[in-house]
Image 1 (cartoon, protein in one colour):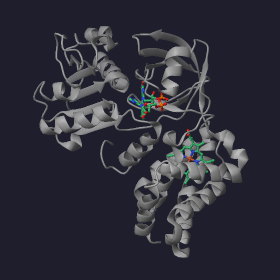
Image 2: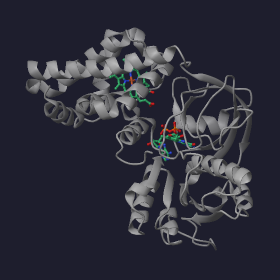
Image 3: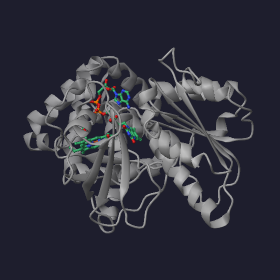
Image 4: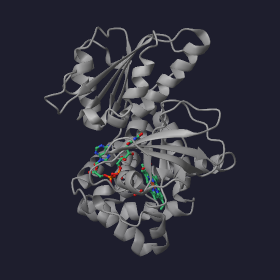
Length: 391
Ligand SMILES: Cc1cc2nc3c(=O)[nH]c(=O)nc-3n(C[C@H](O)[C@H](O)[C@H](O)COP(=O)(O)OP(=O)(O)OC[C@H]3O[C@@H](n4cnc5c(N)ncnc54)[C@H](O)[C@@H]3O)c2cc1C
Ligand code: HEM
């Protein structure tokens, strides 16, 4: 199989931008109208999650050895979209038709055979993993919203109680679907370490123009039933006996998974009397968005924990001002510490660059970006591929 040809042909196709998912979905839904109901009601090319990832993943089939765990996870996760083995043929055919359309004369019989074989390998890995998982785990978990607190204008804190046991680790995330937005799954991160009563706290930031976050903050109600996907991610998780000191940098609700890790560390401190020395920087644009100040200020009485707030867009703020990455980088000597960074993609990129400048080596920086859902798969793939951020 000529994998260089797969990648270069995908790069050519991807140049057509939003026309690619538009063509793919038109082909898929015309040839298999029954598949339309698996996808969100409102779909636009800009919000496409499947096609871009499909082309990228299939064209990188030569890395299947390294990313097989990620592909298997993707296959298991497709159970929450109600995808079954029979659907893979239709998606494969629409992928090939899309490639043929955009490549024109460059679509040779050899290239067609290679794409077909590569898709087959990925599809087989996904289907096999999904079928194996069906024996042991549900396609999704349902949970009841038992409390909602509008903490600030744009952040709500939700309490969920899963109907069945839901195991996860502090620092992980899961996809969630709310009843107001059927089939529009978005990732959220538990803000607490697993509790005996199983309840989960989420911090949800209202994103301007965001379909699901707006719905959650404005119209989700106590008593609603939501669905959860399997927990994912290892970039921010720590073993219970983690040794070494920590620097945590959070932007907005990027605080959530780090707060879960803090809870894990605090439990350890309460039992053993020792925990890693940890400094958390929480950055927001405006001071009233410091939605977890009370709890974090209380925790700062612990001998192992320090907490600094940073505000970027209020010139009159009396405390540390500026992007949280800049404030954190100049806030101490962090050499030798492991950094955990979480927030928007721009915040994470900026913070990682500043921490490297401040002398923390890249392999000691772990991060999770709260980008759009399709991106999570890329970062998961990178993590699984040990590019960065994984254990
Ligand atoms: C692993 C992971 C964990 C996450 N955990 C949390 C969490 O605990 N709490 C939380 O509030 N959010 C979290 N997110 C972000 C969340 O999944 C959604 O992306 C976010 O709620 C926006 O969804 P939406 O449907 O409202 O916006 P969409 O309708 O999908 O997008 C609207 C516009 O906003 C942009 N956009 C999308 N997400 C963001 C963002 N986070 N910041 C700025 N602009 C954005 C899009 O590019 C688009 O232009 C997480 C994301 C990932 C990948
Ligand atoms: C090689 C095969 C495939 C790959 C690599 C792939 C990849 C992906 C990825 C990465 C996502 C984004 C997941 C997320 O947001 O968490 C996705 C979403 C999705 N996929 Fe697939 N997929 C494949 C096959 C299929 C098949 C056969 C179907 C069946 C119709 C399907 C239906 C969906 C649906 C419904 C979504 C959600 C779309 C949305 O929210 O807009 N996928 N896929």
